[in-house]
Image (cartoon, rainbow, N blue to C red; front, side):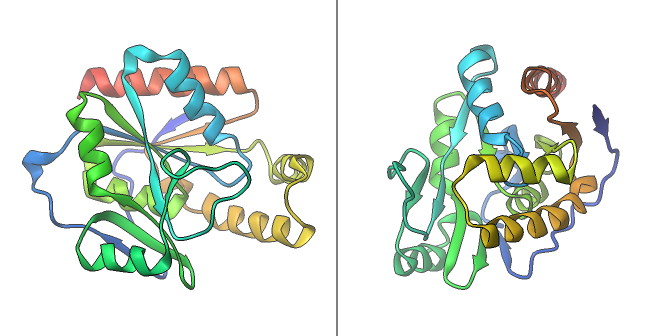
Length: 217
């Protein structure tokens, strides 16, 4: 299902976050934000949108992070991998649209030049970010951003999905589930909530919502 929330408060509940005030209103472009608890399938939906809905001209906005690459991740593909020192230096140079220190010394953020790159190509930036990052970007772009929250059918289903991935220890899975409960509590701050009970149906609903947003703005 999809629920539109008029006048939803754009409040960020993060203990530490930053939103740039560098850009003026005339610089605004339309952007799409998709957030969800880990294991809900947001990355799969985003990749499917880019691959199967080319008419939307969506371009993946690559986030920067100070964490190390995992598995086959490559710099400039999944993330821009920066050292903590370089990340802090870029913060000092005001190069981030928004950033968050998720854990001590572990940063995630959106570089301004990444959004500029996408805009210069005539495309629409689509962000694959966590809930706090998504609300930060929504606060900055306001009505020029469509913020979509993808929900699991239930916490039990989410737990089963995380276990079946066979990539995390039981302790990490518990941490992810605890964080998911906190993120679900902020779902009402998004413009639209869609349950991913069936991938094709979820994809279809997300696509239609984005089409409507881009045509009406």
